[in-house]
Image (cartoon, rainbow, N blue to C red; front, side, top):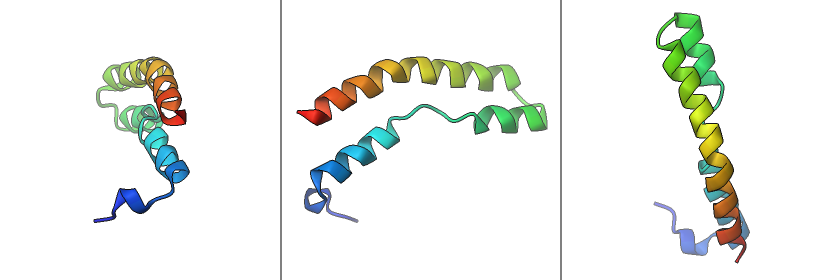
Amino acid sequence: MMNLAAVDPAWRAIAVLCAAMPMGANVYLIAARYEIDVARASASVLISTAVSVLTVSALAVLLAT
């Protein structure tokens, strides 16, 4: 396992912000293609995107300090 203390703080902050990003539209596209839980997939993408506005912003502020 990689020691995160040895990683440059800027790279560590970038990795945390990337991990905090919302679900991608691929979830919806795959659900639509196979016609399985399309409504749930679209709602999940919408909710994760809406929530990420707050969480990613808060993480960016926390990581900048």
